[in-house]
Amino acid sequence: MSDEEHHFESKADAGASKTYPQQAGTIRKNGYIVIKARPCKVVEVSTSKTGKHGHAKCHFVGIDIFTGKKLEDIVPSSHNCDVPHVNRTDYQLIDISEDGFVSLLTENGSTKDDLRLPTDDSLLSQIKDGFGEGKDLVVTVMSAMGEEQICALKDIGPKN
Image (cartoon, rainbow, N blue to C red):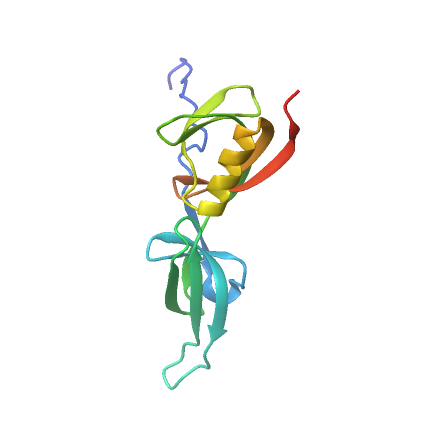
């Protein structure tokens, strides 16, 4: 074999999948599921009895975690469903640009400038009002399947 060392560029997720398989019968309400290639939070699960040809079926009703749209799916309970890896991260808000992008401070001290303001009107006005008043705001960013969106806001007091 060769004696030379191999060096690999480190990617944050190491090429990990955006979803993982889970048996449909084990997915519960308030869990997450992929319906029509969209990450969804499960709001309702109902299971039908086994019929003449075997499989019990699970009927999922989910709300898309980014758009808020309601989606439904029916899957045999013994089959696997895709479940998205959903992460929540808190960042401190530094600035809001005129074109609707926010500048966020990460834990390691660098900035993250690739996120838009949320589309939810009440959250949007809370962020703009709080920022305009000079408050220190921490936003919660939810990420799943390569998408990110601001989903919550915390006020940590006035700027010093």
